[in-house]
Length: 289
Image (cartoon, rainbow, N blue to C red):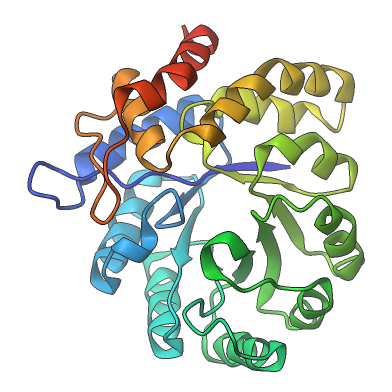
């Protein structure tokens, strides 16, 4: 059972990746008893980072994370860049790569998407988690496709951020008996995912609620009633977080918590208005103070 924060990427006053702030973030996640960290995912503004920035982030991040495993997000339509980034992550000592489909080409066939991933698998040695987030990529990865990709040893599992409840059962069935991990991205579905046999969550909300989510996932195997009670308690906060513009909202909340000095996202994302964060802040502060 596992909780991986989908870590925000802090920037300094000049817009560069701020590794000192990354170190503070990692200390916050570690204090929250998180399993590991995902860098350069959706909350980490991964598509706004250059390939070399992601390489440097995973190199330094692995060193700072110590015993906490690191996963690098990879979101590009370029197969060559995806291969390069996965290789860089592996050489840096990352546990896995979290890879989105090549989202720009939204009208390609499922066979083309399948061969894109299978070619990636054949050219890298790092384990790969396949990431379904059609709201961002424009591509929906079917359970049939997930089952096909799961036949390759390089694919160790999947993350689903679609919010589609039907995927909880269909993805689990497609990967059944293969020893793969399944991570839900929509934390409102966390308990339903755990009931369906999923492994845990790669979570944007874990940026600001790491302890709560870690307790829920860790308690589930031995005390599901307590886990369900905790999830019901924080559900209004999770829903408020999901109504807040992200990832700028999580950055602003981490700033208010005293963890991030600079909460600004990178263009084209604009900072959220204070009013758009106030509801979430009221609920987060009641759970963290």
